[in-house]
Image (cartoon, rainbow, N blue to C red; front, side):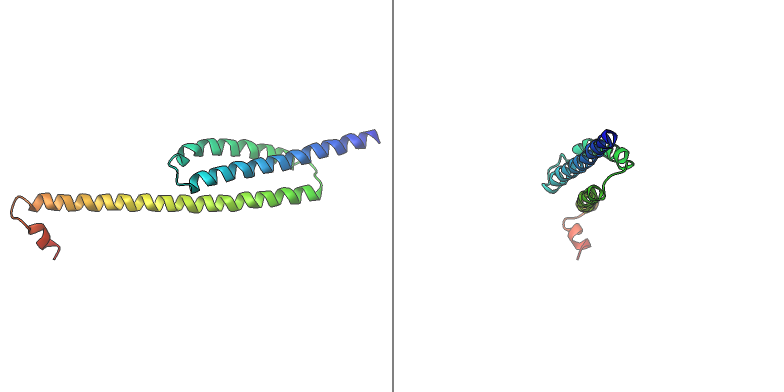
Length: 135
């Protein structure tokens, strides 16, 4: 009977650890999501820290999840992981919006550069020739 108590305690510790790690993963994912969502420019600098923390937490989760766990604990952990996954999708969407905005800014700069080159090309010859080009 004492042996089964020790096994039960070990499963409880592992179960608690799985839930704790799942919550920690959710917490760091939320923090990173809020950083990106805030529009702060340091989101890119925090990416490395986020990925590092995520990697170590996932490694711990994988080690624990190979052990037998009560069904309720696995279900609870899966619900937390689903929230993490949903946040990851939102992070992906926000990053895509950032990339689109950067691409738009680059395109605007390139267009402005082309206009400047055309202006520089036509301006020595005759006044107003650039405007005639775009009529």
